[in-house]
Image 1 (cartoon, rainbow, N blue to C red):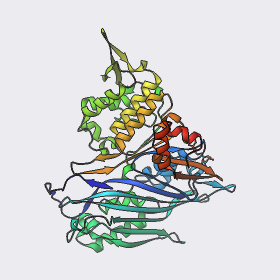
Image 2: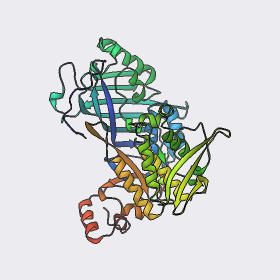
Image 3: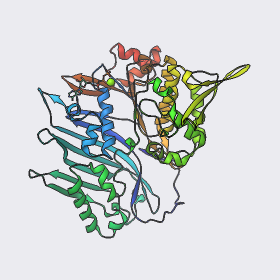
Image 4: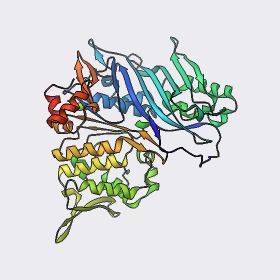
Length: 476
Ligand SMILES: Nc1ncnc2c1ncn2[C@@H]1O[C@H](COP(=O)(O)OP(=O)(O)OP(=O)(O)O)[C@@H](O)[C@H]1O
Ligand SMILES: [Mg+2]
């Protein structure tokens, strides 16, 4: 889960007493019925790379859409979250000539807590389940049921907790009754988790939770609204905050950009100029205005390092590239990227609009990976990329998403997802990174390789990659 790097001494004492903050989280598993091709669907994620592979139409993109749905649940009302992935007609599962009217899901994950007063660090878990109901007659989408539990890991050192520093157990459930009334049940609540104003009076805290639940729980996910009352309760799915799913189109990467564009790589690959420009000027104030970069610690503290990483990775496509810079053109309000090439005798400066499709895509991918430390997915990274670059992207992802060092003291788990049809990409993957997806009777099913040890040995022995074995049907 997390590894202490050194015994932590209490050097930082924050003024606020009591309460917790959740430093980072990782989604571990999803169960779902009623969403697109999901019926008794389940999937689990591991730290590092999760490579989703399977035939066309098996449900790979649906998995990524579900993650996007989870991500927007945190801030948008349910009707908008469904809207953002194509509306109820496409999100709710179609079966037996009708559309099912409920999506049932449960997500489980883990996170790192940090107590405000003594800066103790311990690990916890969350378990969130919900039923989303769609009424065609009334044209409404609501949460029919929700339950959110957080609890600490049994493996924590009991010495971490002193009196008054109780571990963050929390368990609240809401249900919509026949008459439309919301019934809230608080199964467990550690008052230390309440926000400061309510903490002194637990009853006030409970009343606030009930009141908010009755007003908001039909339309909003608990993940969002309880945050106003309960400390760090929004950590479930925190790793999805700022998460994106990339499907990069080279012409989008090459388009000249407006000076006012946000400094992050959009799912289609646009935003490279704005991101590189923010890194180049180390403009933290700009970066802070935009969620993905703001949330991706350690933000822009090491902008120069990120820029160097992007330039170095660019050299893998073309080793003559010495620099990539952005020139602002305030007159036209545009940002223009130029690439400096060292061709021995002469230095050449090329406008980015002249680079090849593969180069454009490569820069957008690398910049996305380097600047966004949150979980994200890349759909079919192989398109436009030379086989050599396909293996490089795997190396880069593995490097960036295994475990990330959050502070000098400990590391937290990270994961990234790719979907792929490329044998070359698979050849660079390890058997235990694979998630195999199939469509069985209209239902998406996933499994991990059962024979991964045997396969690893075979791969070592023969020198043939995993892709070869997958296509030969030897991956079970
Ligand atoms: N609302 C829905 N109800 C039932 N099935 C659905 C619904 N929406 C999509 N599907 C099914 O999901 C499947 C498409 O899944 P998806 O787009 O995730 O495939 P994929 O694995 O990404 O394929 P490709 O490799 O071609 O990109 C299709 O079989 C489609 O019938
Ligand atoms: Mg797809």
